[in-house]
Image 1 (cartoon, rainbow, N blue to C red):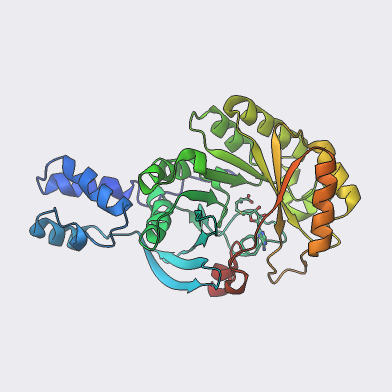
Image 2 (image 1 turned 90 degrees about the vertical axis):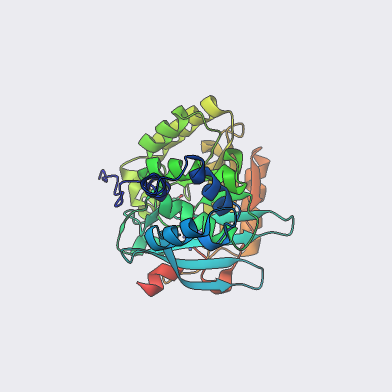
Length: 338
Ligand code: SAH
């Protein structure tokens, strides 16, 4: 299943802005001037007070300020904000802002509307696949939250498989440093899409790679993540090792804890056997309940799983759950709104 690039408006909106500016006979530096305002959280052309008023008004008429509109936005008690956005052609897009006590401000971004993969525990996986998002649509998720808060980290753990839309994901990543999010603080999460891992390994930017693993046992992994039949785990782990060798940055393994499914101590040992502690760090993820039949592991089972991995020398952390009461897990809002 090779997807076409899916870029509906063939260009980024910054390009559209650039061509509009040259049609209006504006000097070349205007584009950078507008981008600086936007990256620093401006919410309209009107606020860009060092642009001539007539230009601000012309732009407001010609170039939409964002490719996305906000349909719904919810703030959880812990400060997590989840937005349900829409593309101009009506596709749902979810994005989340997570605020932590250590002041970290992390964005969770979507790369596709819906997802063509069908992981059985994931709400997005049960939605119809829409299309790849354009670079502007990815960037506009980040800009939306930049208007609310300073930001410093981004993870592609929203809807979709980023490595199936890598050109647009990388084009958006290239703009994130302007918002305060460096490459080192950007992570791309994949189900294990090998051609994408290889392309990312060849790219020089120090973007973090994260792998959704969820089961070391092949048959179980194929059940949870049917894509494992196409790209089996041992080959995926080899690709991750090559990524590590090129980038010298640990690959983060994500492991969603599902009660009675993948959380036994034998399964922890099997996972430890598959992972070289020099290359991989493990994040255990509490399951956010969806309409699927799965239940999350208990805190006790999760802690025991972590202890077993640590006995094998792995670096492990248990991810904080954010925004549970606002359906912040992958695809939950959009699946309901679809
Ligand atoms: N397609 C990519 C990125 C999107 S999903 C990938 O799979 O890595 C980002 C992470 O959220 C994945 O690790 C996924 O397994 C996890 N996830 C999906 N649904 C979840 C849920 N209901 N609760 C907790 N984590 C979930």
